[in-house]
Image (cartoon, rainbow, N blue to C red; front, side, top):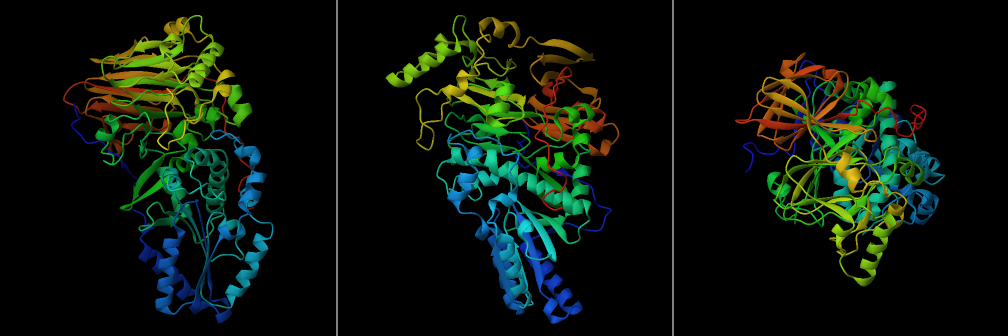
Amino acid sequence: MKPATAFQSHPINPVDFRHEPLFMNQGIDSWNSFIMSTHKQKSQLHPPEKRGVYITLDGTHGADFDKLLIQLQQACEQEGIAFSSDSTSHYVKPEAELRAEMAPYLTDNRAFGYKASDVRPIQYFLPDAKAALQKSARQFDAMCGIHVLHGPGASLLEGKTPDLRFYADYSRENQQRRHAEHMGSFGLGISSDKVETYKNCLFLEWPVWETYRRDWLDHHVQHSVNQAYYMDLNRSEAPVWLPAAKLASVLHQAARQPFRVKPFFAPGIWGGQYLKELCGLPEEWPNCAWSFEPIAPENTLLLCVQNVTFEVPFTLLMEAAPQEIMGTRNFELFGDYFPIRFDYLDTMQGGELSLQVHPLQEYAEAQFNEHMTQQESYYIMRNVPGAKVYLGLKEGITGGRLLEAVENAHLQEEPLELSDYVNEYHSHTGDLYLIPPGTVHCSGRDNLVLEISSTTWWFTFKIYDYLRLDADGKPRPMNPEHARHNINDAMNTSAVEDGLIARPSVVSRQGGNTEELLGQREELLFQVSRLNLQDTWKADTQGEFVMYNLVEGDRVRLVPAADEGGAVEWGYAESYIVPACIGEYRLENLSESPCTLIAARVNPEWNLPLLPPSRRAANGEFS
């Protein structure tokens, strides 16, 4: 049965700045006018030799700088103003040299690298890059026109103090769309291997350049740098920009209200049809395997300010106001890294996930420089009778014996009978399966799984994948050696049935409403509970964030006690984050029948700090 309200795949979070002078800007024509106006003002105030306007258009790899520049050049030609531009890509080290220098992080493994927490952006560029740009800047001065240095690192290489500074941002979601069109990681050329490209980004590009973005914003906000602007360039035909200092104000306000991220969908070889239909995904997609909502580093938020909607990475919100969102205890444990994720695995009318295992904490740290390993759980949100989940080794089976059987299956090209080695359970709507690191597991076909897990998501060691090829015609990467070091033989039938299959217990009642504790274990940083809601439920964040997903019912409303005008509503299969600073609130069932919400929060007994690599000295790139 389809829900009564349509799934919102582009949820907008309004942020109220109605009473401030307008500071939001949008559109290419508006950008052109702004640049031309700056040139005109400078021409009126300075002698000819100082009338040129020098602009740094910094930003994220993949953003369409060219579209902006072509339009600006045409506007300059119409006004008879000299125009020139240069790209930071002209000053990047040769690909072979860069790959050699970054080899410790890229590794020779197709899927896994070593997170580059100590690489600085300047290491991407030729040693004489800045000197060359200083020379070209002197030549530009004689033009009295408009010159733009554009691309990642423009502010690092600027040949002179710019008149205007921009950071043009571009989402990971859009970057990955361009990866499918063979755009490689920054500086590493084109690529036809999406797995390797994602690895290069996850372990090198994003740790380096997303830290640089944070430093750029911090510097221009803290030092009140005039004429510094943040730009959303996810839609190159409709850029949106605002002063960097105003962005900080917007983010601080957004962090003080419940919010929803923009979901991010992806097809996959085992993907199903349920999410594709529910979420109105493109007809040409063969399926939908994953929906991420939220995985903090991957998702963005749509914020509406002064009637202008723009897109920002969730990580920017976290960096701007981590304690307001997380709460003091969680901030001390995780810093500005949001520690819990929701995502969907859809195998309805699809296939089975690969049999897999996730690394132990110490292995993730030592092998990948990853500060948080992958702790998971499966909540069965919908399924077909007869659907199965595989969890834990059968009694008497060891990880070594399983891997030997898989190797023989590959050599003989004969399918492995998975249930001979791994426990097989018939799944039912409402079941929760806990999956500590080291536990072999997978979902069978015909399940819609809501994963409630630690935020880390890439560290899946595939053990067996039914001898199938991926959509690109290549075998999916198997990781038997990584798996060998991480399979916990103690996670067997008795361990699974003694503690990994949830046994709900009612922990609170309000009238006909009940809250059940579903899952909490010492080695898992998250706690999962379920709220069976007939009418209204009163709650309090008690200084820590909580995440909700409506797993049954049509619609629900959340009303903060301190700001009833800030109420939010959401529908079936959608998620909301309630920041720690909200305090008291109530949940109201807007469905015609009882509804059910899953709630996730940090395990109250978790006390192990899992802080991301310590950030460099404040504004290190710009001091």
